[in-house]
Image (cartoon, rainbow, N blue to C red; front, side):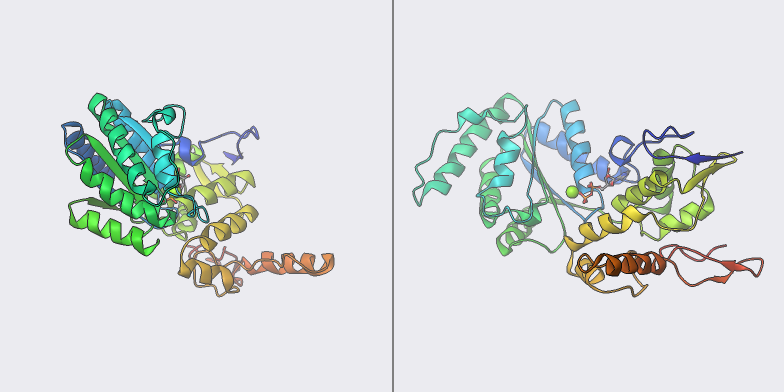
Length: 349
Ligand SMILES: Nc1ncnc2c1ncn2[C@@H]1O[C@H](COP(=O)(O)OP(=O)(O)O)[C@@H](O)[C@H]1O
Ligand SMILES: [Mg+2]
């Protein structure tokens, strides 16, 4: 039996989840470490754990899972996420974690006004310490700070001070960061926290078995060998896996054949190229190189992009070239005939 697995709401035979609503896969070890960490903090001692992983490896997802576990352990939790270019806002990520959201760990009005004097940051930290101490005496606290590589330099100092001052109280700090990135003050602070005993939870690419589970979650059926081989091209990066699967569904490129999700066509979804490039451009120097360089065919996302400027006919011609360049040249298939495969996909069986 053959049927198409269609995109969300399109009324296909199977509509699976989309990443964040489907289960977290292949991170049992990390989840266990986080649960142990939270249990220790709940018993009365403050602690810091750093989740380290490149873009898309699942840091934000793990923070969400940690918050869910913490709620189950009667923690009050807060989450702040630093953003690129916002680092001029003093302590933004910390303030968001403590005072943001409907159920913030601390009442926003509890913080008095400050006069902007030179000593203010220090007094502000002392006020934060007092408020956090009061809150932690009522209920254990989990402070999640995401994308700390983009946090302002002052956050480095704040983290060092507050974690020390609150070390004897049930305050858990969970800090997600991309490796080897961030202002020197942030990197120094994280190094000091690690030396002082902070645990590091390193995220590596998902194992093939976890990739297969994610595929089955998103598509609602186990993936066939052809699809798994294509997924292997994104090297275990959950963001890219989920995005690739969502693109395949959206563009009706997956079919259900005898209960297995299989590729209906050997091409990469169009929407994928943009999102991957946007993500990569914000990621690492290596990512920027991949984005900046024209098609070399040796990376996981080496698709040529069309020009954004120029006349309509130039842009259309460029777009056609871009589409063509997302395929490798035809090569003989098993029966000797031509066989096309996507550039990201490994050779066929
Ligand atoms: N272990 C996992 N299992 C299933 N999906 C995951 C997993 N880790 C991340 N994802 C999904 O991959 C995408 C990217 O994850 P995210 O946490 O935003 O990465 P990061 O914060 O490291 O950039 C999200 O859609 C997320 O739900
Ligand atoms: Mg993230």
